[in-house]
Image 1 (cartoon, helix red, strand yellow):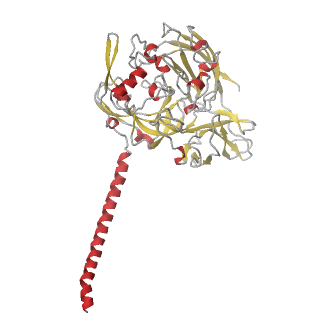
Image 2 (spheres, rainbow, N blue to C red):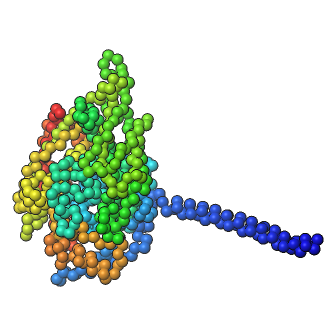
Image 3 (spheres, rainbow, N blue to C red):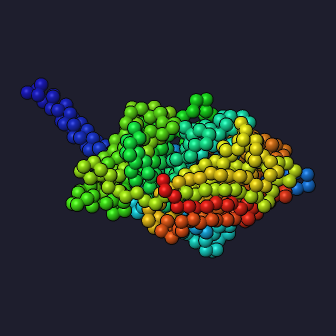
Length: 567
């Protein structure tokens, strides 16, 4: 008993300890649950719906810089470049958007190669477009807080408005001519250096860039563009773009080139080579972020409404059920190893791209063609009308440069097919030979595109570009977008971008020449239409060099015809 009595206090103490430990564990587990829930809530908070534009400037402050040229003294707030883009969530967070590429309107000049980009953050000009998001993706749109003093303010007074569309950008990989730029050598030959045109060779039609009216599925980094206040949300850069074309394609049923069919076209392009500041290139600066393409597989559904597909069920004396067939074609630049998966659902095609076993540096460049066949393996889709858009010539009425020969870069597009006109001049350097650098005012074009628009479908004819000046000579001389507002940073900007540099000595910003965006509906076209169209556009951004000419209206005129042809 004595032994037992002596043990009793110890047993009681042990019991109290056990009870105490149980209470502690209970409280600890409860605290863990609270913290976990809080973590879950904070994670939800970090991915906002319709984010407010003032959140883009958190941690950013005004940064004033004084520039003197002779007796001219100007003060600039360069804070919009430090940095120009900030993530809505963080740099590892990506989002997807699905919707229709918007048509031209008074507030947006259209799907095109950007005429102006900040050279210290780019190797080449961006290709950009706006998307009307499907309802499930509208949450990506920004609530933009206007003060009433913005140049492009839609109402002219203080207000908060949800953006109408989401802007999307990917570096073009083409048309730059600047020393010490890794893209310049290939671009001068008319070849791509990667990005959104990987695999492109001189004279090729650029097949994978969306056009107005196309449906797209895009994936990329969800960022704030602070360079156009109030800040707007963008996917920039992209890593995947799937484009369901508004135009049809008349293509062989097999890769062997057997009889052709009228097909529905889905262009697929995916790459971690997003831009100068977001890529997987060797030897990149420490501030360049990597693109973890192999971090996951990619899967999405491309809507296919049977009512909108060309479909004929009467194939003879009796009605024969139809079935959807497809084939996948590899394009130039494709380095993705292995097949992609295509599966038909009731109202869509599900496409799966298994990337986990692929390299981060791989490029997927493929097209899915789909069409209807009957149970006798006979195509049932009638061939639609074919139109040829033939560009004849371009005449320039104004010369932006007076003291030297103008250096122009010109783009053409019809129905989603793009060309860089410089690639067709005589000479080895598409920026300095022939019409590209000359006092000649007229370019002979003589380029034609064939398109197959469905009945009632609108298609675009487009001409655009710029006249290269000083900024084109410093593209690719990269600066850290997160550098602080201090003297070394300002000195670096001065060395890159102010008057006593190649930037200033050669005219500062590229001169805008305006654009042509003409729209046509197939069922209202005559068999032959001759068109004379004049360039138009708004004013350029503020030009830091004196004597700038920002006029874009009637800078050039283009002559072209649209003719119905038998193909």
